[in-house]
Length: 302
Image 1 (spheres, rainbow, N blue to C red):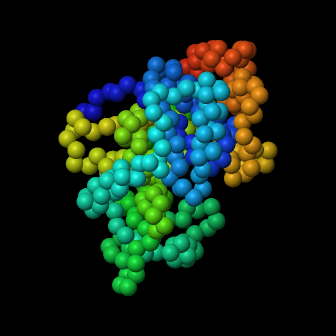
Image 2 (cartoon, rainbow, N blue to C red):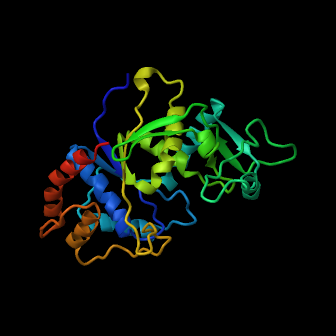
Image 3 (tube, one colour):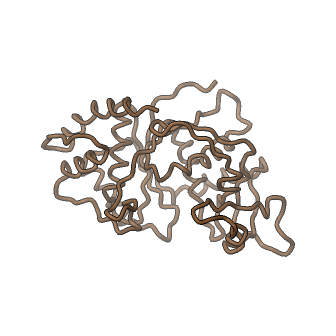
């Protein structure tokens, strides 16, 4: 059986703009969870979609974390510098017949889902699973989903069971424009950095089963003692804007204010339903918050 590993958590923002309060809440939750467990907290810049990301935003994220005393351990990993690792992972999956080229256009996939009601998941219909139609060229590389459902547990939300064949269908690992898909790179990096716990926003809950499927596939054929357990998951409630939408860069969320880090920490803290902490510095605030977070964690266990 895989051995129990020391706690390693991570925060992995995308630098498509400055850090906003919603992302600060996620950073704080994952940081405190690592602190409660006396573990490591790693930082990874997820800039794989290089057309939407920029170095200025990445630098702003680092400075914002430092200003709030959310200090990571080790080197900051930057995905745009790790293409060779993703290529090696894709080759490994391909060798195991776990990927295939797909020629389908977005319109063709939409047309195949035309009878689904609004709000239903759009799934890939498997058109190219057994080979592309004659005369077509590959537009993407897809992952061949397992036949059995993926079961997993969230610390707050409880048990999930997801049949990927009916919830998403075979999903993209590498896009036609050459960019890597999130579901591959996030797993490759989490495996490589030996992440044991993932604390992130609830909006990413429905991506988890796909990532577990890739995680398991990348370890297919390994000796038992070499297998790494899938991480423990905790999806935190997201901060909503006044219109009820998730606070995000896409909905115009403003950058975290620079003038009062303690006020910012208390703002996102109260979002979790926790009482304001009186402190004069971020370091003092985090020390006072740690035992409260431990109790909060225990109370939420599903």
